Image (cartoon, rainbow, N blue to C red; front, side, top):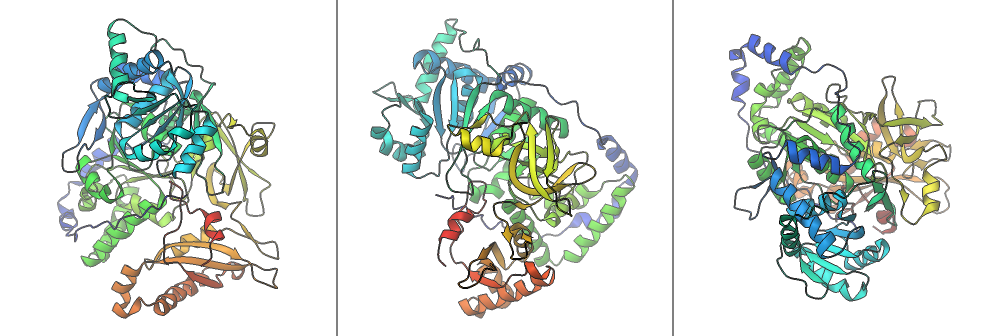
Length: 614
């Protein structure tokens, strides 16, 4: 089952841009001094050198005890509650002691399933520090799939939140191998197989206070199988990806060499934690650097939560970043300021080339609507329109792109903040190598990865492991792309999605979808090759979800009938076709009224969509 993610319509006020009017009052010499101080040399940072997550835990507990680690809303109308590193680290030790000594679950496989909450972070860190083997599951899974994965993973315990209680209650009788069901935010004593997380933590605390140091003394083997991620995937059956502590620690080392993340930084957590992108780069990395994390209450609260928590960095996926971009620009248009904003983008870009960066002053009003402190936006999980990335840079935010898969835990490439190249998926991180296998005349081919972040293999599936990792340790990513002369990777599509014409030409749907996505009348699209009776040639078809609100605003109230919508979208397709070589042109249009089925990183599950009739 896919996750139906509906990105809310972000409402931005009409912009006045008084800063632009007062641009002449800016002290150029002072700004030049500031720019010189913050200017980055185009060279790698020293970075960290951790081999396990426990090393990062012990280091952060000592170095950053008084720093805020997490900010969570306990109630919607209440302000953010701050939890410091010391409190969190003490809870990890107490909970770990409780799990291993009170419940005797040391080295057992333990599932974590919940929304993004304190209990998730606590449980994951406790397991990574030696309590057991972590199995994070997608909270959006249907009951039968949760049951299936509990059995497949041979889990001895399930840690879950109140919101998942109904699902967990339904599977209890069918999973007798589970010794304990541990409920977050509960003080309930052991009753049969049920117990409260807080009870386990407090019992562990009693042992620690009596001098029990057994949990802290657990030694971690960096290369031992300790994390099992199930890929939701855009191809049918989910695979179990086996990872070790070294895989995750190398992600921290990789990111810290390319990005200057500071103790004063605050990340905004909006993506699901069961995905390796958010749990590794959105949690373990900032934790290792002494930074803080603000938890988003849910997709519809993204904007008010950003404005309240004032993050400095956001990890996103293209659909989220593109929607923020579209809606800010829409508000700029409504304010009648498009011309002056475009003009100031050109001016500030020109001034920046001579060493003066006025962007954050000139575009202060836009930045204030995003909390005022945002300095980094990272896009990963799918290609993004380079124009969107360029716009992010143009308003004074550093735009970075990451590349990887669950199989690489996840980072394999990243754009360094000192050499951020919009459009590129990044350079191989310091513990990885990238190569293009059998490149065509344009240098394009399948992307192969060799990295210390690479998985141990697929869980209980040696055949599938051998199919993607060759004898020399190179992993076939399934992505297609090319590497430029400076070592920057550009992804052009997925080899599994490629449409091959009768003439042997390859068409990557993502390229055409990105062009369609530039039009506000189109909410989302999926391009594929449609089989037609009595023809060997596939018909290039666009399945489109129209943006009816935008269509009505642009073309009037009579424009949302099925016939009119089809006409408007087909006109756009004809425009897009003019920019494509003839064999890539879209020949057929299907209007889709419901949402696409998606993975938790908002990728369309193509195999599911192609099984459906219109």
